Length: 310
Figure 1 (cartoon, one colour):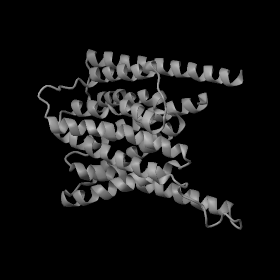
Figure 2: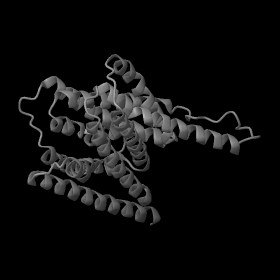
Figure 3: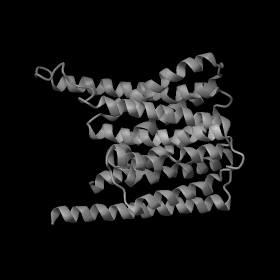
C-alpha cells in the first residue's frame, strides 16, 4: 500500500465521520418525524447527487471516445463487479435499518455503541472477503478504541431488551461487511458514484412504501432539516466510499471512532451538552489509539517500500 493512498484513506474516513455526526444533528433538529421518513431523506439526496456525477462522467467519456470503437460500448460497471455492488447495497441497507430500529427501541448510547461494532466486523470481513490479513497490534488498537467508545457513550446494558439489542448488533455487523464489499468493488474498478447510487437507490426503494404509509406532514423548517440530513449523509457516503477505495479496513477503520468525538463537540456547541470526565478519558483513548495506529501503519508502509526497493 502506498503511503499517499493510506493518508488519503485516513483523511476521507475522518471527513465521513464528521458528516455522519452532522447528519445526526440535523435528524435531531428535524424533530417528531417518523423514522422511515427520515431514513428515506437520508439516502434521497445521495441518489440524485450520484446520478448527476454518473451522467457527467458518461457524457465526458462519450465525448472523448466519439468516433472510436469504444463509442456506445462504455461499461458503467466492469464485468463481474455487480456482485460486490449488490452485496454492499444489501448489507449497507440492513445496517441502516437495524440501526434506526435500535435507536427507536434502545437507549441512544446503547444503540450508538452497537453500531460502532462496525470497525471490528469491517476488519474481520476483509479477512474473509478480500483475504486482507491483519496483525495483532492492528486488531488490539481497534479493540482498545472500542473500549474508549464505551467510556464515551456509557451504555447501560443492564435490563436491555434482547431483540432490539440483537438487531442493533446485526446493524453493526451489516455495516462492517458492507464496507468490505465496498472496497472489493473499488479494487474491481467500480467508480464511487456507481456504488453510492446503487446503495442509495436500493435503500430508498425499500423505505418509500413504509414512509408513505406512516407519512406525517412537515413544516418548512423540518423539510429543510431533512434535506440537510440527506446532504450530510451524501457527503458522508462519498467520503467513506473514497476512504475504503484508498486503504483497507485493517489500516483505517479505527478512525471511524472519530465520529463519537465530532458528535460530542457538536452536542456541546449546538445543544449545550457538556461531556463528563469519563467521556473525556474515552476521547483521549480513541485519539491515542488513532495516533498510534497512524504511526504504526506509516512505519509498515515505509518498511514495505524499503523491502521492495532492496
